[in-house]
Image (cartoon, rainbow, N blue to C red; front, side, top):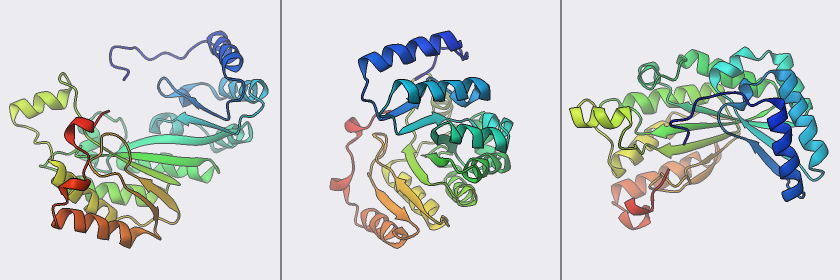
Length: 257
């Protein structure tokens, strides 16, 4: 989405201009997402000002969400996160991607599994809602079991409020695409992807989490409230895999990023 764009923090003037234009075009907005990269990288004072202005300009606003990279979360103090919550920040979206240290290193995530856990736990402890995402197939066939098991461990340690699963899709010029051509990386097929998800779910130990795999990249849209629906979720995956229920899977041409 952001390939070819350099990251920069917009000036407060730019942000306020966008808020002004948005409030005039969509005055009845109830939800706002602060996008275009890791907005949590902004200074807390600036972000607090943005939140205050949003709630002033959008009188019906009920929820504000934000992307939060693990390194930027770790740089925020508990007091800063609590302040953002008080100003109306509702939910942080954290891309965990994998719980494997090797895979995190290969994709240049910039943090270890332990740091990822610390970042996620820090958000949860602040009282903010946390939504984590993982990417099925990110370790390829070579590291599929490791990816599933270690990701289950990291997600369980974080214990987020929401968990979303995406399935790996690669652009033609992506580094992993080049590794496929060289034979260093073997992508999972649809059935291997479901087996990986099944193994990951088996290892999840969560207290109150809404799981979804309804992203367009996934072969099988699923929704479950964990841990309550864990057995049902595993039963569904087992049935689809063992009985080769091709008819319930999303066709390849319907998948998208």
